[in-house]
Image: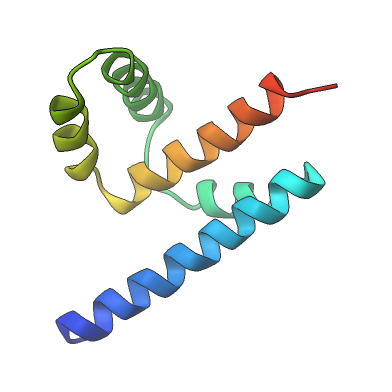
Length: 95
């Protein structure tokens, strides 16, 4: 796959994930997000470490450090963080 075709494919997948996130937020159905997370090849420790880094760095005042860290993450790690934020938002705004 050429670089531009790969970027377009990646962009389309990202839009699908984002659309799934929006549908999940409206319906509170986690099945769409589970489909994004379950096939990832990472350990529980990988996820816990990622979330710990994310929370620690997002609490700091240095946006450049956070941005550099975030930009260096893989697509799978970005997916985990998106799903985490959806779940967190749902729990924070439960009625």
